[in-house]
Image (cartoon, rainbow, N blue to C red; front, side, top):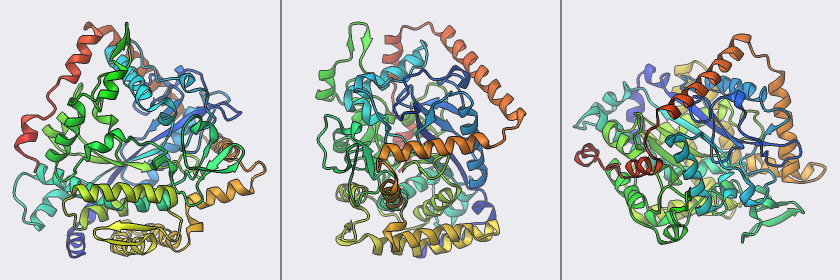
Length: 529
């Protein structure tokens, strides 16, 4: 706590008002009957390869909507709302599925994989997704979520470096500071699952043919009574194979070297899949990770990219620019999946992770953090749940209250900087949910499903999605905004055509060159400890 209070007092007003954030929100396109849409990505939305705000994730039917960088939660929410409004003008009768766990799904092989044109870059994106399908199944890849991107103004790092009397370059200190934040985030992110987890139930079609421990809520809906976020538990977006990596976040060097093992070491089960079947590519490679993005983490360090660069190389050359939070479920009670109040809580929480003491992680702690995550995901509302913190076992509410108390001076400082009480209000709401699990998002979802006419997850999500569609369509869109998005769509299609016309290299040569690039660059090996 001493470090937190000392550094918080040093942060100038410009830092507390200069936090930058952005959102990447995934949603499945679904038919009016609640089944996955099988239509192509609408051409009127532009190129999924090059559009700056509207693309697809794993599936051709899985939109990813991306805001720019914003100085406050309200403007970020406003842009995300605007993107949703424009999307709804071009998807016909389809809906954007409002929850993280998928809608009714067809047979696994009938889930369409994202298509990005015939350039080498576009083909690589599609082949990568085929690799994910072969490794984990297409159903798992249809899980959606909200990614929250967060950075501090560059002016903060020299202030903190001077306060801590740390030597070296400011860039190296900044990168170490973000890894400091990441270690604490991984220790405490279970709190986000408890407060904001919104996937306590699934459609029975999601687990068709799989072993599971779920209970029956009704004929078409499965759940766990104390679950908060099945998406973030063993049933969700997880990989037993990747657990062997035990990635350390003690420094950029340790992180990169851990991931590099997964990127370069052949993995027998994936070798058995094979690289290609005749002229058809089955995956990009046969290592444990095809590329860096395959690593399933709750948070990622992100660099400034240059065209054609691999993430690890860019991190080694230019350090960490921002972090990406990846454990947030879509909020089915918000038309765009994340509310401004939730963003404000994340700002408080991430500042706490940065300012609080953050000792190095160990293999034992990494294993305990993973277990805490899975326990809270599957039974976070169980009052008897105990979590592991170092050598002790303690109750979720007890640990959560201590974290909320430590966050109070941060919320107060942010409120002073913004001349309001919004940060204190969102922190008080979190404290109330810790005191009463019935106030959590997951409990509210189960109550809504239980009180609905058909008592089904799909029925609840379909009704909410339709309600959100109506509310977004009722909002006015200025003509100049509509014209701007139309221009972006056309420009993105033209950009894709230019990329395709410029390609002269055979795809196999492109694939080999991309995967053979030296990721552990000299800059990375020389510094960043």
